[in-house]
Length: 70
Image 1 (tube, rainbow, N blue to C red):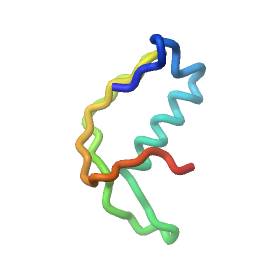
Image 2: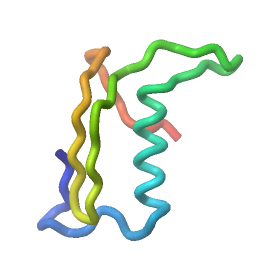
Image 3: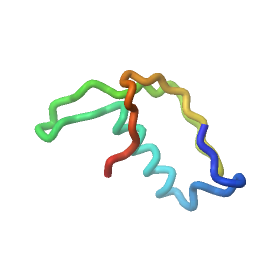
Image 4: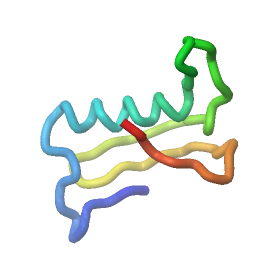
């Protein structure tokens, strides 16, 4: 679960929600510079995004799971 400090909103607009989805997709669907698919870093089973917090149900495939690089 991810939550804003003092339950403050972490998403201000639809673009913020889309950016998180893009980050999650990047963990599950990875490609190298030549377009060759790489192994996923995790499996995402479910998510729920609300204005001030997020629930994620995922299984890591790597010990060093990291978020968006972009």
